Amino acid sequence: MKNSKHHLKLNNLQVKAEKCANRKEAKKIILKADKAQNKINK
Image: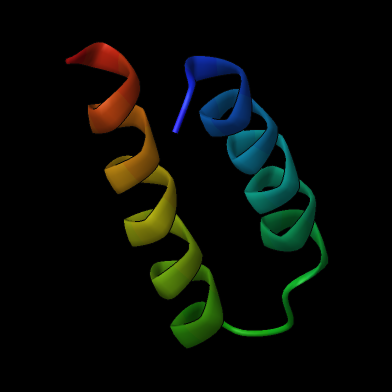
């Protein structure tokens, strides 16, 4: 994927993280965000 798609994915994950109801969901979202961030940094 292009960096623009990764940035879009990070923005979507941020919105989901703000709306999540519990810690378990938040941890999953954070792991996905970290993975997307690592791909951008490569």
